[in-house]
View 1 (cartoon, rainbow, N blue to C red):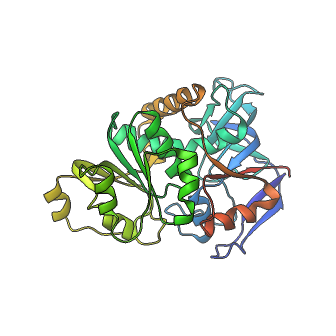
View 2: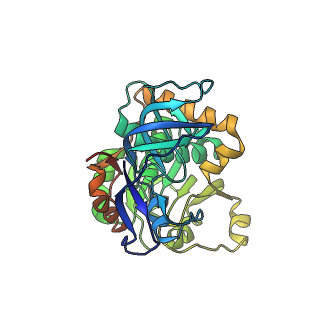
Length: 326
């Protein structure tokens, strides 16, 4: 089979190549899947550099998540050959066939195609865990979403809107604002540059934001501490800016807000019942047409470099989906 292999860790993708390799053997407790679509996530890029918190030793098959058809599974797994499923692991999805742990696999929502299912899992579980499980967002609350052109950011905007919150979508690239407004339909879109607190204050009539969802970090995090309402929450999702920010603890003390870390995958592993409930809630929203993943482009896996470079150069508005076999 064809698979995207990270053979050495480099900063320029030179250690990544599409190779022919034997298909994986299914171990007990795993589901063997014919991959129809797989989506690119920022950790996939970081892992090619050895810059993610999970650092697999090369060589390894890249790819966090995919969707496809069950080939084989344990008799008591609840899955049968031909089932349409979606799921993921930390690696292994960018291949024609993947073997994934049962805990990471679920049946695709009704009415959702393979591309959308592949693009939904990690982004929407991250958004749901952060906004609903951790922050308990409610209708009418102001939610500031940074990195709103990325898969996770757009998922957070989409989910928050579907739950009745008022959403401010923020991006560091002014040229993406129109696309974000068209795709996510937030209540407002801002260019998150320099001192953007005054923009937030103007939009919210001084109320500021009940929740700030931040996958960016760095200067964006620093300024976001000024944008959180009293008793609000600032959710640390990641550090796509490249700088891990620090905060003087008198700031959250004086303003009465909480800073909370979000690791959706680890949350689901530690609390499997909640993980299953989150997946079920996302599937219900998707089946009802209340949430829809934003896909920037769909590419054959043979054009993997185009997708990775577009992410590296911050050209995307939405997810990249790869289709194996092309």
